[in-house]
Image 1 (tube, rainbow, N blue to C red):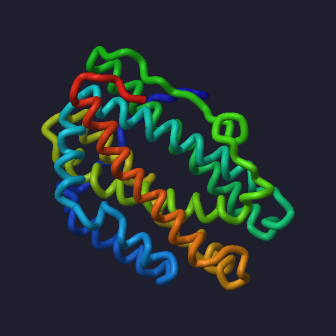
Image 2 (tube, rainbow, N blue to C red; image 1 turned 135 degrees about the vertical axis):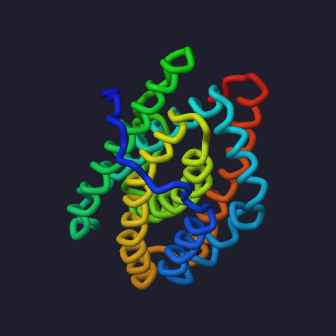
Length: 249
């Protein structure tokens, strides 16, 4: 994977209000339709907002935990790109191929942006280089594209929603930090966040179409949304381990 260093982002008005970002995300979630928005609206992120805000602040204040988070985000974006590439040209999804490939290109750009931020932070604080890697969806994750084709599109959609909510947690305290390097990280995440909102909008149209066609049912949406909900607790466990001095994967 190519690692890049970032030019300083353009000036951003400070502070960016967390409540404004959360309201914008709530509005985006409402527009995806009730079949998708209702299970997402039950995520722990909404049920226990103060818990995730305080955890995010602790992570941002700790050099190692912040580095691990940037590393994780880079690897996650790269994984998403490879999953999208894996289904983009399959015949049942041919009508959406152009949008999927554009989306995958965005994910690779995000992967490199987060990687560059991680490399810069590691150099600045004297930490070991970040552990950056690519993921093979079939070999590493056991994904069967033929068996899970339409559900994978739903999964990417839910993943984008989760990414957006995580960015809402991270960006305001980063931009409000005394440390200039952290403010640069927050500013660099803003255009990624704008991309995520666009991805959510186009994917919601596709996924709602799949539901209309009966390609999967509401029970599948609810079950996959619940699986993504459990990732919020995995985040807590990962960050807690890092804050405790361990290097969680």
